[in-house]
Length: 139
Image (cartoon, rainbow, N blue to C red):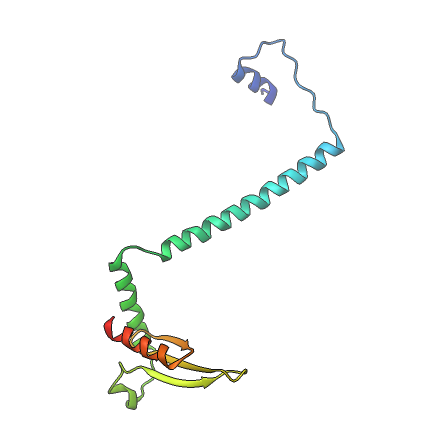
């Protein structure tokens, strides 16, 4: 059975008289090697995580409108199936819900909910609520 050095000599076409290199053990070199490898492993793991985030960001911003429409249709269906049965709202399910609320600091907020899309928004002024309603009508 050939040693690793003999295989290396054959592959690299080294002459038969070439001496095998001697390994010099140094605690300092071993320590630096260990630190270097751990640094490389950490950077590789971080790069892998950054690649995953980049991939997910690309997938979430799909340029194909058909795919987005398909997902929004499924989202609407899922939202509709998960709604509790409420006979008051069953006759007009497309009407938005608007509530005026106060936060801890006493600031007034307008909570708007669109049952068609399932989206909730918090707006600062009544003018923003009017703009939101107008945008909802034209989309």
